[in-house]
Image 1 (cartoon, each protein chain N blue to C red):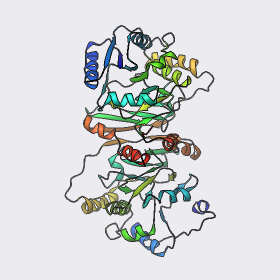
Image 2: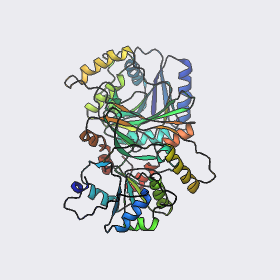
Image 3: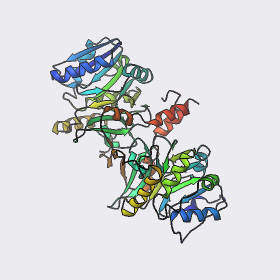
Image 4: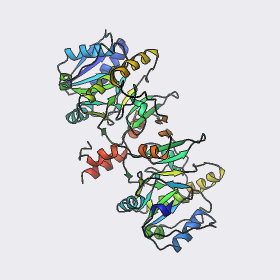
Length: 237
Length: 254
């Protein structure tokens, strides 16, 4: 998939096949890498929108760290719990029945800024941000919450985070809030929200649109109102 | 001047709606026209329109409660840019119900009662305060410039009941080249959800024959919408005023 995306562009792929945790694996991968910018990617995503390298570069001209899903209001280790209108991104999943569906957490514009935390399925940033912020492989020594920890610390350090809604992804797996996840969520809570009780969680539902194929998904994920927006005046019309 | 036209046969609901508009139009020039014997909403609205004197018209259900601030100014501003403004609608009408196209072609956000006693905020789509290029709107609240009625009116002959008059009116406006928008910065509580009983099917068929006869019959696209459950109207207002609107206006103001 990445070979197709980066055809004709200078790039390198670093595979870590023995990571003790994602934080440890990414730290090792980054130290071996030579490129700029750096993309950290899960192995079960498919990017199916065109022009990813150029779009990513454009977003990285205004953001330090870009992902494809996240929140402007982190109130819980699960970034999604803030609910609309504080969650952003749009991801295609395969339903239990084998059909495709687009989860639209929030996509008011191609790039949403002022993000506080990003999902780790896909994150990209300049080398400097990864070297400066680093992954906390000691606390997050498994496969959960390393992403929220990293991106939230980047936000707290004053970095500019964004969600790119114009990089369309099919993700083969969905988030599972199981016991392992809960163990890391407690660590995250102790690190960032010590002494705080569980916040009021909005009971949220975001749009889910069933589609027959990825071509239709791309259409749903490229709303015509984005075009109006770029033509809009200062009055937002 | 605003003319608010309400068809209502329920004294309590009308009194509540009247009090709500009095509160919203305090210190503004406005009039309220009550039609208490409408044969259909299209007939009632046409009669209300004939009696009205305002240059800006509001056609409102009697169970709508607008709780965001600054209604007269926001609406006047929107109506300086658009001919018709609603609170929910679609940029792609594919059938006799405006929601059928699903996201990202439906817009608006409306608050309704939640079975728990709290409130549901139903967000059809609110990428920014006002969304243009709308083809059809819901009738819970519709505002229009008077000039619109030199081109179109409510079709009381075809829509002689209480369904589809709104879709017909707005789609007819869209087909005549008028500019329609959905205002996401006017937050309403709507006590009754859509009621699709048998009569609806009759009018849906009439709508199809009138407007979509040359199109293949479409179905509602399979989708689920956004619902956020909140404790009260203050929290609803927060959810219905996304912080990214401010980023957008800062961005476009550069």
